[in-house]
Amino acid sequence: MNFEQQKNIIKSFLTEFNSFTEKEGVNTKLIAVSKKKPLQLIEVANKLGINHFGENYPQELRDKDLDKAKKNLDLSWHFIGKLQKNKIKYVAGKAFLIHSVDTLELASNINDYCQKFSIVQRILLQVNISNDPNKSGFSKENLSKSFVAIKKFKYLQVCGFMTILDFNLDEDQTRENYKSMRELSLQFQDTDLLEISMGMSNDYKIAIQEGSTIVRVGTKIFGPR
Image (cartoon, rainbow, N blue to C red; front, side):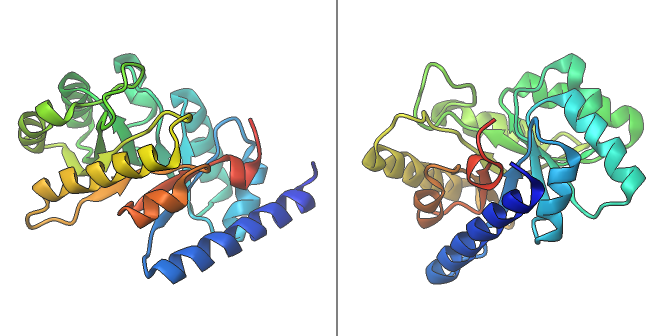
């Protein structure tokens, strides 16, 4: 597929997305999941109005960030993959938002790294809202205690929550889990308006209807990996 064909696919999706969010009366942030996609293709999407891009692999984000700086591109990276302690250096300070902080230990490790370089890193706490044994994240039961502890870290800014569901759930199950995530997040909304990152290509409309403020869409924008 050439860039002109890709451009038409992106335009078509943006028309669909903007029409849906306008109908729902929301201002949901769109993250284009760009893992394994070349920077040239990201530039195409950026010129069409997409400003936020999600990456899953730390070294890939680092390399793309270097190329972004060389080209002086106006876009932001979001890290949405599993993050290991030894890879924090590739992400912290480069990602506008880390979506996948799934343990208190990881939050502490990110804070320790950021302290060395006087970085304040924006993060989301990943919640395993469906209690899926194959998914990582805080459980509903231990989220409150962890949230309080992480909020005390000087070099982290907790901006909200992220969740990811099994691809094979039916529409009712998906909606129920997203509704639960929204209800859970309300327990932490005090003076801050917290983000909820949930919904992907296959279910982003359901997620938006159930209160998502950020959706992470890859296939519908860039095609299959």
